[in-house]
Image (cartoon, rainbow, N blue to C red; front, side):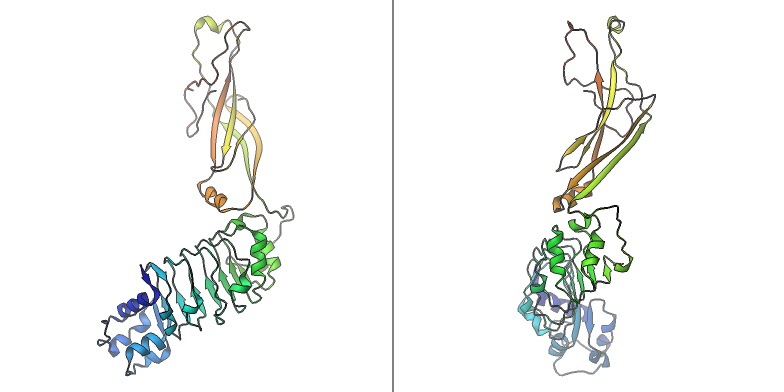
Length: 351
């Protein structure tokens, strides 16, 4: 694990292929600066004019962009402010959990903090030049106080794949960013709500792109009501190729009692939530016609988002009803009978 300034120094030395004392810098190496995908320098470095203090000039003055990715950085230290001309800075894929705006260059325009361990919206209000902040793939669950955390000059904000679950609080915070033009919320629990994009674009009048889609293309489906709950519908039409159930009975009993009857049903389970058991249906020849719709309703939550990744568990089962006389001992409750030739890919238990 490391701190930001140390990681940046190592990155500069590696990209320039120089030693720690900077004695090996030469014009040939400077000509390769434009080829670096991780560092960006001001145009003055491209003139190949040597300066008296290369360390001070290149590290502290002429560096305008840096991508410090996947370096296990846990802290942005105060030494980063010495890179006073940095405009574009990326710490994607590190271990940052908190951000101190006093430790960042004041003229930053673009800041990427994606894929870290940030749980609360960082306060970056004093960075008045910021136009884009990337906070995707973190653990942020509230952005209701954006007016106190981000400068109103922000034009682009990426909050995708976080834990935002409260639609009203999210919209309340975003409304305060009057110059916001580009917004990404994809992957948050609130995105599961009906009419989510239409409601966001209707409230944020200046927004041009939402989740990489132009807001002018959003159409409200009048048949879907605005709701703070998520509805998930599962419709089962029919089940085909259901084979005959074979129950082995003593021959002496076959002529004495009516044939057993079999009824079929589904159990629909969403892990961590509830289960729904359908009604009983009879087989006609080798087909079961159901044509039933079952609805689950939930409030947006991180648990729901994570659970839906794993999907539903749908179990197909059969119940056997055996006839017996009033003097006869009924079949033992809960006894399971193995079914011959079960339908492939289904779980079928007799109860």
